[in-house]
Length: 121
Image 1 (spheres, helix red, strand yellow):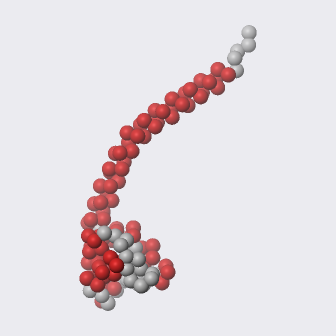
Image 2 (cartoon, rainbow, N blue to C red; image 1 turned 90 degrees about the vertical axis):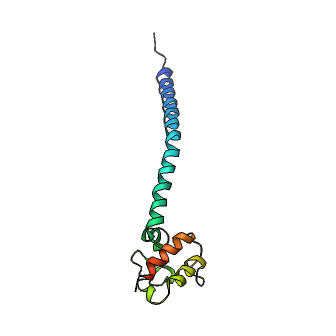
């Protein structure tokens, strides 16, 4: 008697489908937990650390060390000696010229970044 060659493939297929279902169910249960933990971590960092907000939002153009660069973005290492905190916050919120778009961060983040940058003299 010959064995049926389809049975091993059918078993592998059934086990694969069951494994996918189990992993999907586990993933769905963890999805909300992961999303919630990410929001809390990001919210805490942005609310209390203007430098972290700057690194996430502004450093792409102004450089991680505030030296400027991309697209002619100005050097911000001594921006506090040129603008007041209110002027810096206005530029962050409304943009400046064609190179600096406004509204990249919310008002609270803009205020925190402006206060941090105003200290750079």
